[in-house]
Length: 364
Image 1: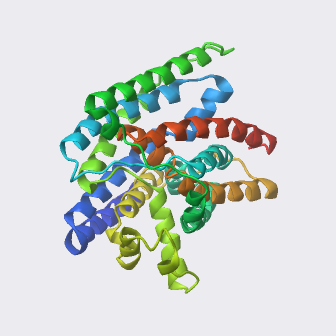
Image 2 (image 1 turned 90 degrees about the vertical axis):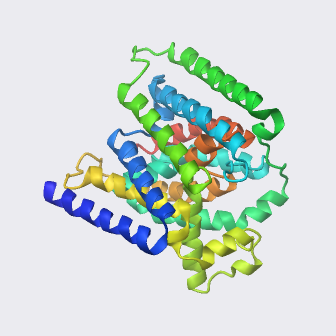
């Protein structure tokens, strides 16, 4: 195990130096941040999906409390930074509308069935979990198709993105964000009081993970100039493959003909900030997994494989419609003052209520 891990560390150092020398200092730093994200997610098993499922099924709020702490710390740092450097840093804004409503609902259900959101799929694939490894490519396919169809969904009805910073100022944005988090914490406390088996309210490992993820998310914002995201990288990979095989013409597509997206398609994938952090998450999870035997996963039957892979495809498609997953929409959206992040959480949780029941039905 030590030999395998040493070899992997050497490979990651070489790749980081490659990015530093041939791409940019920024990309090499973001790759290191991504490795840190992967180490925390995989090493501490910080699962957004699992936290919600434990709250629903067992009335165990420890995972939800950790996520609220993550949001609180990230918002407390990110919102003042965005207010101080509006030209250099951007928020994760999404347009409330039919696209967001449908996407968040479907994503909430699909992530429970597939046992992972965007970050969960990445780090569990890095841990060698077979279902998540199979889901990763169909997640990318779904994300690409979702981006290709996004214009049609937006035409069904959408508002302009709403920034709490722009609407209420820094003080108002902080007050609204922390007030919202306090309300959610109160609801979690009320729900957890009905547990038949008393459980610890807090998990030291998850709380540590929340603090570390918040710090790394802020570092991503400062280094990249934009919040931590995952879904865009998946869609970009799918779009590049489709374009290379002449199956897709981005110049006639509403999403991929936009200047920033068209540029991303033409440039090396190593210049995309979301790709670099996503690769870093995979690398960090691989470091945790290196040399270990992953024999704890139950064997899946054919029906479970099919249902899981379909759910993975829907994860990709719906996350693009919803302007992100638990990371891009919830963590980055809420922590940078986007109204759509709050709408996403409410609808994704409703979707998760259905997803947990479907997951039970198929015996996962």
